Image (cartoon, rainbow, N blue to C red; front, side):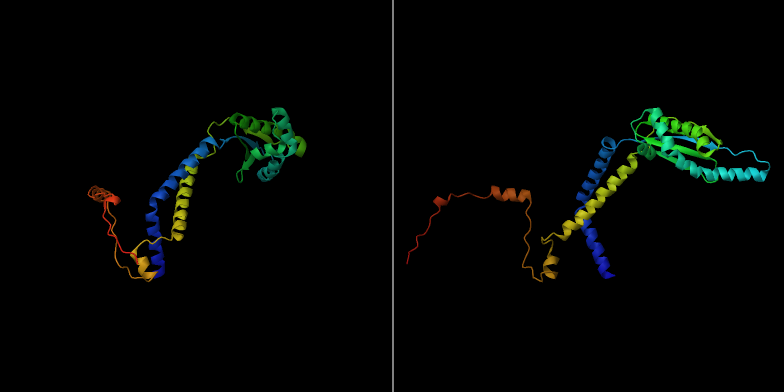
Length: 250
């Protein structure tokens, strides 16, 4: 317990000693994350359209409830159909986009809530208008083709996608916090590494306890003003004017 207390005190002392360096690295991390967010990362926008799975009219309440559960279970199948090549190939041709089917599928997410007959087609792209076009075109083609593919006619477009001009990524606030934390963490780590490999004698305690030497005295550090005064009071005498006493050689 005592050793842990000593180590903690030593660590705190190291951090205090290099506190200014830690702050500088934290500030650099903050600036770097802001610069990367503004100038290197491309903003991404998302747009979504909702589709409604309508249940058929049953002969009884039990039949209607059964239809609803069946339609909800079909949504999982619809997710695979929407991101499949049959739908996306037609989307690609209609929009005349150079994106491949795989690239289109990577931009599309299909989400649904539990026990809900409504599911959403969400598209993410660097162009908010293109994201809305892809979402709406995918929904329209899915509605027209699903009857042929699965012999069902119970899908309706509940709401159309509109361009959302507010980017969903990158998040400037989160990136700035991450940059600050990484900078401060790097500063702390660098401080500990520098302290570990620092071989200079820091204080008298190191001489007594580690080297087991006995200090003979202290040399005080003179201030700039005192050093300047000493220089001003010093008289420079040329060496050739100093008399030298001749010594007899043996």
